[in-house]
Image (cartoon, rainbow over all chains, first blue to last red; front, side, top):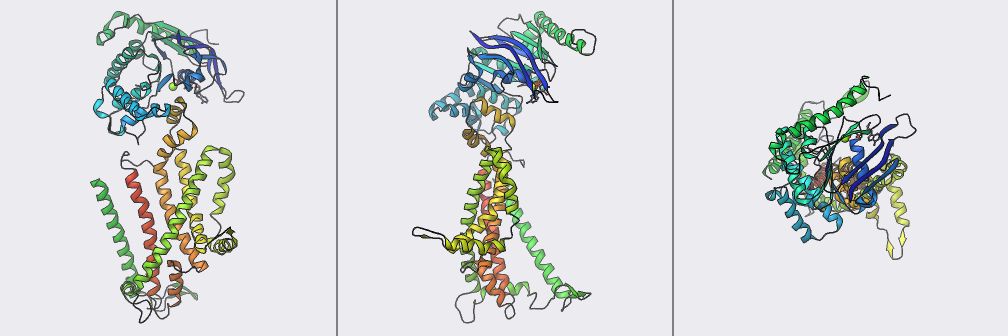
Length: 266
Length: 293
Ligand SMILES: Nc1ncnc2c1ncn2[C@@H]1O[C@H](COP(=O)(O)OP(=O)(O)O)[C@@H](O)[C@H]1O
Ligand SMILES: [Mg+2]
């Protein structure tokens, strides 16, 4: 079954007004169960918009989005996905443990179940001793791991992430990438991941979706043939560099079109 | 917690120092200023420094220890304390009433934009109505109120006036706080398909706390002012407002006496605001230490 199916979706903000934006135009994308797909492209090309459409935080102007065979709206009501943003967005007034339990509380789980799951998630992100800390007592990378734990607490089959490591330094970032792959392998979660970084997209993904702006659309899809097992050596492999080059060319072609070297834009 | 204690001690020291400074300025002017005040083109621009107009600071304080009226066993201190306690209870009632109305209005305004557009301008206007004019009106309305066996007591009208001043800063501050939840957090709650009410209690109110505390502190002081002014303008017996009128009438013979009642009213306001600060310290103990507002 496809985890996410986006069919001919367009999104127009402020339709008919002078500040109309064609954020997405005729986008089609299928994500298979267990797949890791990255969206990459210059800012303003509609990556966040596409993610929000899948999350049903926005309604498409035209086209259809389904998640696990349901409408996006039903999937949201069923909490079929977890979400993580660039800012960890943890609640300052809750302990780490209570933050992880938030989605479970909203699902109506009882205290014991919640607490057991929080323990499990803390173990998963390898911060078991920080449950009773407050978020502001943790480093940025730790906060982001807690945000991931929160997103996965209800064991959703799908994880939507919008530049989750964008605010982290390079070292922490690479470490977090490894962690994310480990967690996803352990849970079998499907991931749609927005990023600005080409190596990050390639390292993490089965497929990298290259997007371009005005109007936002998909220009290229790069299959990354690095196999399931990825580690620090992956970053030195030929296939890694080949995929990076392919993505870069996808982005560059679009750039050429933009500065008037190409002829496919207008 | 030690830093909290240190801050509290520092603040109290500052406060005492400020009071001492006022006393010093008072006494300096009294010693150096012209006995009959200063006049410019026939208009008095400097106050008189006579015993009658400006009693010594130490006379004001020693007045606390002497009998309220000649030959009575009750000291002024006892009378002021009893009056302050009475007004305190009315102020607390007014504050609680004002807080319920204020928070309720803020929630409605946050929930429904049309309520906000329709109500907020009137709230602002309501605060420009002079309290002195309003007090007798409310008392007379209250006097006509009878619901079954329930007769509206006069003290309740006075509390209502405290509430009338208290609800406004509370409504405005709470509304600002409820609107302060970051868009990403609101989206997160949306992604959990959380209802508006769930979002209100799990996200918006906790975010609003740092905005609500200063608003409540203002509301607490405002409630005291409302109650004391209403007591003065309606002449309700028992409270510090009434003492201020009564003692002011004796100002010719006993000029220091009225200041004891004024100090009582000031202390009352401080106690109310202090209680809110104490609640703040407890509620905010686990929040990041940098200022949020
Ligand atoms: N709520 C909105 N209202 C109006 N325009 C929007 C809104 N959200 C996004 N946009 C516009 O849509 C385009 C795509 O935005 P976004 O999806 O955030 O891009 P990206 O995440 O790729 O940087 C941008 O031009 C942006 O200004
Ligand atoms: Mg974005």
